[in-house]
Image (cartoon, rainbow over the protein chains, first blue to last red):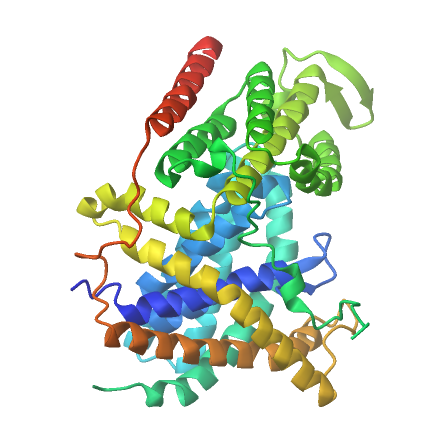
Length: 181
Length: 284
């Protein structure tokens, strides 16, 4: 049987992707911040959490489905371009997972590793989306850099807080209950 | 029960995913594999086509499809109206930050004021982008309005199957998609319960200064953390249930309803392919 995508990983990815979709449609995923974009998004956080808890396959799946929905449901013209909406999102959870696993292997503190994964995942989203907007000719490189700095920093802070706040209790509560049959 | 006013806790109200309009047209009845392929062709064309005339023709063809699918035009256009403010902001932004290529010589200056420069190339670029967004919006609404989520997942899996040979996990993607769609309404209800429970304990999610980023983030934690913890718990239960029923991934797994392509499915795909190729060749 294919162990990369077993029932546990698929169900975890499915539920996390559902949270990402829900954060988008309810508006809960947008935290008001004092930047021109008005909001910092946390819709990519489920992908980061998937990467940390389930490894690269789960992070990849959650990111892919988050990208697919942000494309299908987009009301912002930029995100109606599938290359911008889907492609960079597939790497959020993958890079977050690799960061977390690499740091844990190097015996870095758990909380530090989770925070680093959140920072890397958020940067992947910001840089990937803005980079492709520039490559596709929608935005000037100067404007993209401005948005990256002004909007990226609050997003990194918000994502780091939420990822740590979710992963630590999940590790403590849910995981020991796991069946060992 | 006269109180039908939607409350701030009513999260389910916003969930429009899987909104299906059972109008029974030939577009609805198409085999999802063929519909997805034709859809991919048209989306690819809208994304990559660089010509203004091409985008106009494509938009006209898309409107024709919407009419053929018996989706009320006003209903389909509703989402397009929502994007009008964004399109306006985008157009103004382009005036300030237009890519260098547009400012290059060879463009006729129509209007200039200080650093702002309106050239005919820029007008073309804005018109082309607006047309492209309208087409993509209509196409994606058309797909979700005429296809049930089950058929969408089944079609995706069947289409991606050949790529499993090169290691693409088609079955895992389709299964995750199905689970995600199934869980959105369940989790929306869960979120509603959580929000009411926390609000009854005095939690306040909405207020606070825009500048207090940390404070605002901390305020939604009582909602977000239990949502994640409970959901991951449900995922664990679901995984056990799947394994208990002998779920072994995609290998050797059949489907209850078999997809069977009809001649009209082949015809529709052939028309879409011919349209794509002809438009591309004509404009290049």
